[in-house]
Image (cartoon, rainbow, N blue to C red; front, side, top):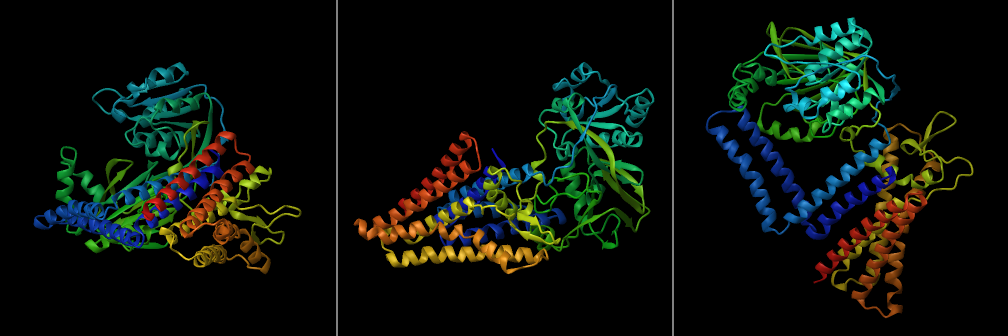
Length: 612
């Protein structure tokens, strides 16, 4: 599916999610959203009580963690709206997934690739116990040896020094080092590769494979990583350091590191965590930390996570994935929560007072103790204070397969950018380069929105027309139920709604440009107004249908259905025409038509249900 098609699908699915809520819940949709937010906040606050207290308070919090979601679901069921909530949530998830895929296709977040020579003497270290035995399950040793690699298995009861193994391989003439194992082992061997300027191969045979995931490798098929030995490209990746200890993912300090250090943790993780956390969170145990990051000081966080490159905004805390590993900065994430209210406020993400998110090239972790615990890529260590963290930009040459899934989930959803991608269908069909960010460079050095080159014909916004038709259909459904709404009022409402949304879109674009300190000229203002005009134009055919309905002998009910049919026909027509004008293959045009027809059928079903 093309990038434009994915962007259009994201917009349609997002609009459908809102439409389902409005059509089937009406004013109660606001109550649904409010109740959901309150329920999630209450659950987060109750979870804090479970973690930070013992005895009756913990049991009370545990009861609330279970009871609040149950009560929320029961209230939705009693109101007959559970299916509305689930359908809207599913559509919204589909919109986010399609939008992320479209943005990833634009390569805004991808790291640049460099040509790579085929290694002549690759050396690979494999841990047969890692990931539940993936090395044996996928026959990684045999497949690597068939490709000419020397393979060493980390077998035996005694731990092996992987750093010494890697250095010995380099001394024997290895021209590539690689690891099939956990991220901790990956980091140690990667440091040797970086020291000698050799390419490094990551094989996703670990349990979680965060490093492999952020490199865009296939975590479900570790053997696919070996394709890099025959058809690979290089990525220049940063390497983190805690003192002299390398890390490829994260170094954690505070509560988590203290819990993992406990000897009882390996035998009973849950009980040990619940036993130690109350004192750690209340600062009655463990050292008090101080974080200094490029001039910013964070005093007394309960937990600190330093990452090799900042994590993206894929979840409320922003710890889902890293969009890239070559930005040359550390991500710093601290948690300071002292009450259930602050725990609930964490749902606000990085705007929460309980969360601190920074980017820095160097980070110092100090404490009121001579030593602190640290978890470095999943391995527990004790380090002398102060602990210095730094990043070595571009230190690691990572060899990856030319064809790989990519790290799509790391791309933050930017709806303005998604809409721009949906708008660039005509430009792609005309053979022109899509305008990045909706802008072109001005000869004088300024940047203007959609500045067209001489002789270029303005492109019609098909996605805006589809959106406008969908909006008109929803207005007809909402106001024409039972066919009792006056015709003149319906015409006015159709046109006024379109104008209001047109003005809102124009204002949003102008306001966004002002935040970017871009100059506003009369020409640019007119351009933005013209670009958003399809929102109004899409409302004209349904309004005209209402106006001419008496000439066709239609009564009020038939007029409402006639206007809805015209709006839906416009929705399908604009979507298909846009796909055709973009030069999409026939299969994609058919898919576009089917999706819009199904969406229209849902609107018709909604009107039929409401009318009866």
